[in-house]
Image (cartoon, rainbow, N blue to C red; front, side, top):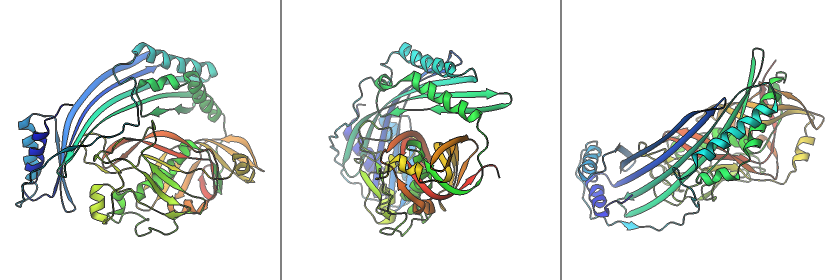
Length: 461
């Protein structure tokens, strides 16, 4: 979007007049398109556009934030006056000179939102549904959808930063429900990427529909999982949701800076077994959680969170850096201009290890194989979690045997890290949306296959 830099400098300076020591403008122009298919019919085909600006000021460790849609000179000045009203003091109004920063765009956007073929998208949805229904007569319902977003952002601050970025997100989802009598089981597949709708050309929609249906039908006929304390093998990809939720959020400055994390003061100490190395990496080309620059205008980084079980770093935004007295890590993110940024994850994963999948399975005499994880609940202060296993199987004498349903994994993230005693070689990622103080944002979770030597499994007692 075309913005007058001299006007931005004036607004940033005006926002400092009651004593703030930092001001920041975040402009956003977003175009989105969502198409949904249900039972063979296009149910939704909606395009939308949203434009706005957020203005943040900081005074030491205090933050004031306001946002609006009026991008005129009068509108921006009024926004500056509104944040100033939250402080009572007298500040120096500096002469702010903005310096445009060139950024290398590592996520090429071939077909931005609104430029793709809607008929092609509809055909993709129908192909997934046809495959899901064709898998079994027990598939009673199929829903599929495509979300396509193109976002332009401009960030300027009182330190002279001026940066512009373009971002695209494309995601496909298919969910299948299997039914028998009064019993229903569902499963889904939801791949996504930091890319335009060209990403859809890389997907096998029939395979995705079939996989969703297969999982739903398998769980429909599975007995309830037995409860108890046992070893659990968690598969790669979305299995990483436990590290993300039970550990990742507790490593964000949002929690650490306020003392609301079990990992406070643990830098350089062991917080897991020597098998565990974990990263948050926002620099991976094309990945769902990646960014060229974060929502504070900084380049994203590859952060080593845990190295061989030792806590190596937190994820720190600008305000968190002030509160903690530590450097920023390029972790400031927000859902949109309606939210002030805070420390958030990007692509967070446990790194590949040296164990083969076959050896991991063979090492378990009596346990659970969690092939697919679902959602759950987490207390970020204590790391206590409870996660559903969407697709599970018993392991007997080193072999995967009976499918089971209704399993949950219960524990504390900081304790579970010490119980990871085998780590596979095939790290993959899965896509999700993460909610926190600064809204809902695209994030990847990931891991190779891992073995947890002992964990409480909820199920049929």
